[in-house]
Image 1: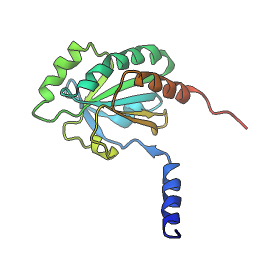
Image 2: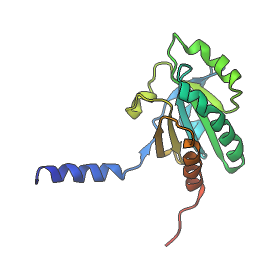
Image 3: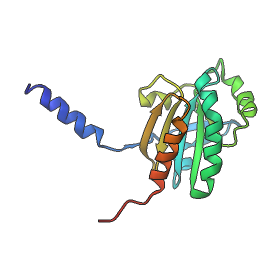
Image 4: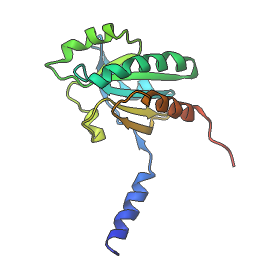
Amino acid sequence: MMRILPLFLIAALSFGQEKNLPQVNLKDMKNKTQSLSKLVKGKVTLINFWATYCVPCRKEMKHLNRISKTYADQNVQVIGISIDDSRTVGRVKSMVKSQKLEYTILLDTEQKLYKNFNTSAMPFSLLINADGKILWEHTGYLPGDEAQMEIEIKKALTPPKKN
């Protein structure tokens, strides 16, 4: 029993700590290098990792587009990050066009950023506050998940209560 207690304590302490978004540069759809930390600075940002071969990702995209439009005037943005590798990255542009995506799309072809989050499932979403802190993570997509995303976005937009 005494050996287990320190593990619980460590888990509890590490669970409460906020994580920062890693500072990385990624290519955009025009092959220009973008600093992710500069893109998210000062905005609440929903980052969504996806791939062209991911069926749930495609189903989620229309909701991300709507969220992007709905909250744009509240300093909220959506950034989609394709993790398609060198074999499938050529399909990204046509997917963006067919889905009529209007939010920023970046490419993580070597999955350097994606691998930071110890997940292999997609889609994978993160909500980042204006200071670059990760507030919320979500793996997968089922119809209705977009409602939870909006709840988390609204929480991020609500100023903390003063005591």
